[in-house]
Length: 227
Picture 1 (cartoon, rainbow, N blue to C red):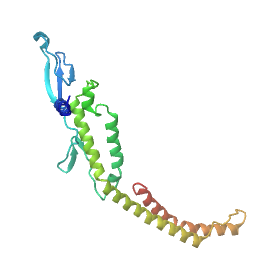
Picture 2 (spheres, rainbow, N blue to C red; picture 1 turned 45 degrees about the horizontal axis):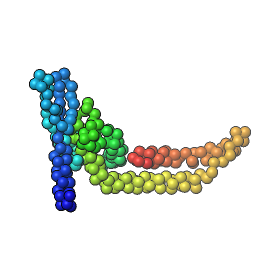
Picture 3 (cartoon, rainbow, N blue to C red; picture 1 turned 30 degrees about the horizontal axis):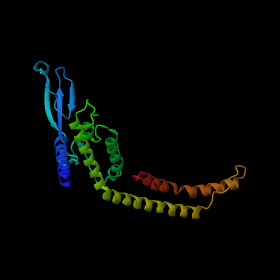
Picture 4 (cartoon, rainbow, N blue to C red; picture 1 turned 60 degrees about the vertical axis):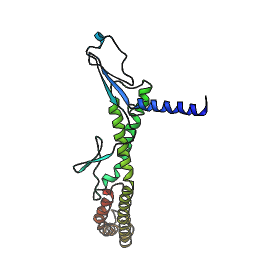
């Protein structure tokens, strides 16, 4: 076999494989049982074909779905994408968790993994429509790609929140330093010595006059997402 002939044979095999790659047959028997096959059913006697329906389907395309706008919401197929608002940074910080959930679905659902390959090998779960599984896979790919495109904005939001937290923490440090300088260390308190009790009470009044402001600053830090 010459090199050119070998090349033509390989090319023909590729074309044949691609021609079959996108075809699928949904077969419903007289009792309503559904099966899917890459090949049409073999010819049967007319009596055996009564009540049997065969529909040709298409399972093609490995590229992701496209983001589409419906009203004010964006979708990847049937997946509704979250609405992001810079004034609500929590939405940006939740994207990584959402992406991981979509990634886990793709990796964990065998019906979504290499749908066409599983069809070739006869390992498809016949209880599920392969075309639906293939579409779900493309929707998930679209959603994951959409999240990846938001990473620049996520980084900006995270940096802004970190700066806000840092400013508040600096205020807390300065306020504690002012308190410690003015009030000093907590003195020893002996209930049997009125002088020591009076000294401790003066220190306590000085110390706790800063607590409300400190609590407020610490609460603000705790409310910042990601801190």
